[in-house]
Each structure stands twice: as structure tokens, then as C-alpha cells.
Length: 252
Image 1 (cartoon, rainbow, N blue to C red):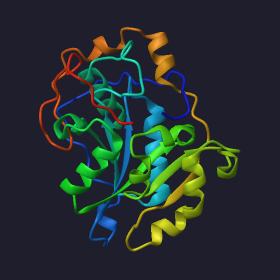
Image 2 (image 1 turned 60 degrees about the vertical axis):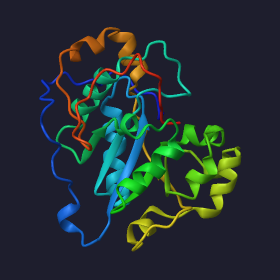
Image 3 (image 1 turned 180 degrees about the horizontal axis):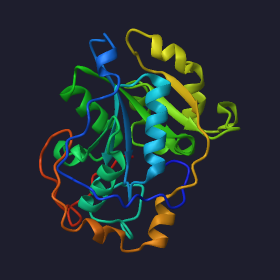
């Protein structure tokens, strides 16, 4: 969902039962509500580019942490070549280690198929959190094709992670046209006592060459490395199992 990125798949041994570390910003802020970035995707597999984008957003927006929403199935992506949820989740846990990033497959538990429903469910369940939706500038071009995209705009701030040279004015889409009116500088968003959508923040980010596509091309059987992993969701703490044969909720 972001810039497609070359091989950067870590093979450091993974302890999947480890709990994620405490958030970096939690002890240094007096805010009543925790600020959490949401990064949805198939993570097929997760790689260093996802991690780099997340850490960049945490620093730029003053987030307490980022949650990676590993989709059981994305309605906008083909099933062919999609690894089982357990393998994709395990690869995300591996990449998120020792960072203020939590990995979750909570969409399966929530029973949500589209981003608009996932956001609503998360806001209802985690009312002590303020969420911001993170996405690449390429997704903004097609954002108007997402289910109830205007409801998303009015539900949470949106942070678009853009390539150098990207200009909001050059994006021709209904969503971009609407969101231009609500642009806020990242520094201003950090200082706001409370977030109130609609808000659009553009984050300039140097391209990262790594990509899940390249990883799959170089290691078609990458998912086999995680076949025997014992997994628990880092948000719900429920066991992660292979849902690859079930109907497919997703994050678009």
C-alpha cells in the first residue's frame, strides 16, 4: 500500500511469544488519550519498509505507537499468492520487534470487512485512544473507491505518507479535492490538545526500495519459515490461527 520496496526481510530468530515493548512516548506525555497510528495492509510479508514508515510517522506526529492491522483478506487484492494469515502475522511481529509497534489481526474478531467499519469498531472499543489513519499517497488516488470513504474522512485524521516531489495539488481524485480544504501541518497536529476530523496531514518521506513483491519473487516459500509459530495477538492477546480458508474481511 506504500512505495514498493526491495528485499529487506530480516531473518533474525523470532520469539513470537514476546510481548511488544512499552510505547516510547507514553511516559513523556501528559495526554489523557493515547495517540495511535493505524496502518492496514496484507503484510504479505511484512518488511523493513513498513517499519521505517511507522517509525517516521511516530516521530512526525508524536504518536504513542502504531498498530499494524494485518488483514485476514483485502477485498481490493487477489487471493492468489496471498499467504495464510498466521504467516503474514508472524512476519509482521518479526519486523515490529523492539519498536512502539503492535501487531494485530483484530479485524477477524471484530468481524469487519471494510476500513470504515474497522475504524468505527476500534473507536467504540478503545475510547481512550485517538486514532490517525496512515496511508501512502498512491492510495489517496483511489481512496474514493473505498467503502464509505467520506465517513472515514469525518471519523479520523488521515496522514498521507508521500514521496519527494509529491504535491497534493497534482492528485486528481474526488477524495483529494475534498481533503485539500482540511490540510494541517504535522507540527500543528502534534500541538493540538484534541484531534477532530476531518484533518489531512502530508508527511514527506524518502522512498524505500523494499517491497513485498520483491520478497515473494526472491523467496516464494517465505511463509514456510513461520509454519510452526505459536502466535498471540498483541492487542487482543487471543491465539492467531490460519484463517486462509474462511471468508475474507479486509482493510480497504
